[in-house]
Image (cartoon, rainbow over all chains, first blue to last red):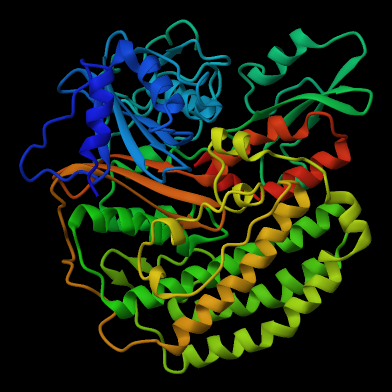
Length: 189
Length: 386
């Protein structure tokens, strides 16, 4: 069930929110989907949580996708309303170089670890997050594994390879040079 | 106590931040990562005032294998094998969840018989998973006998049934995109029905052993209460949420597969304490047996596999599919760029999200109660860390 009226209500409140145009033959979930400008993510989320018609009280999941060709990270939020039993997909696109967006953890505390996971593995900083620390990898781990330009640096678990050199790609060929994200970790990591 | 075993490069992040806040009469206690009651490798740092817990932090990642990154270099059928390893106590449900997402991408129709087989193995696996919970939760509280009954005897029978159907006992790789790997063997349905009959008196025995055991009740009733509002805000799903009151169950609210054809109830609790979380799972076992009996009685003929090629390339697009696993909503988010491998795959593991509630639950309780609360959440670290 596609819920355009749900999108219309969000757009009536926030005019710069758009419904991503449905390109022919692409596959998409039937739920309502809106593309939110990154700077508006917190006001839109607060509206979705607190408005009685929306009542999105259950955060299902959030994650990020690296669209390296378009030079953007896309953040995807799936929200659900336990009262109205409807769902909405929220998307926000941010610049790859800046990789910063406001945290929605103050609105749903369940986004806490999921944002930390994106911070850890995708290298996106969430401003206003109460405890933005690595969650999966250890301190000092170089690079962000889920980015598309990530190059694995060999460690003591790679047998037969010198430690600290770029590892092998999926075809078993050594990477020529270290990728942009494998250098020194940015501050905060 | 302050040494960190996760890395020899630096100290663990959790301990350092908690140390800053420690008051004069407070101390820190490290629970795990090798503590038997953490059911895997989870490290919890507890801040104590005397014996009362004032704060807690979880340290995850000991089992992180980078499944989401591995998936980007594998074709879709190769990922089903990885999904077995996420929640290794209910691998059938993981296979199923992933296949639901790929089938949504491919827009494949599933034969009725395949859906019936999926419901049968899915519900049997839910029971097997709850049996592990039943046994280990008893051990956490101090009762060893329930474990021998549920884990050592009854769960083995389910694993025997699975071994018969696919050859494996833990990691099945049985549910495939478009259907299931193999048809059920001759007489298998009859053996499932016989197992259901055998289990009826045993479930009464379960209640005698643990459910109405006064010591067990004293240790769990009123301990670790989670309010419905807080649970929903954190995103807790599955039995842990239903113990707090809401009846959210994807099988009822947004029926997938053929669940709308079956009659079953959704057990809920009132208080959201450890006992309610136990009771919801205990009653879910009975409900799952009801579904299995109905599915066995109306088991249809027909093909067990739909028309899906050996090699398939879904169209460009993205889908999120979720279903009701034994621990909550298990979701797979797949972005496809039109090749035979996903561009991005994200798993929404129920345990990972549910475990966030631990910090709220343990505040104000004593260390022995932490063990009860940890056990009642019934998480699997393979799924938390991925």
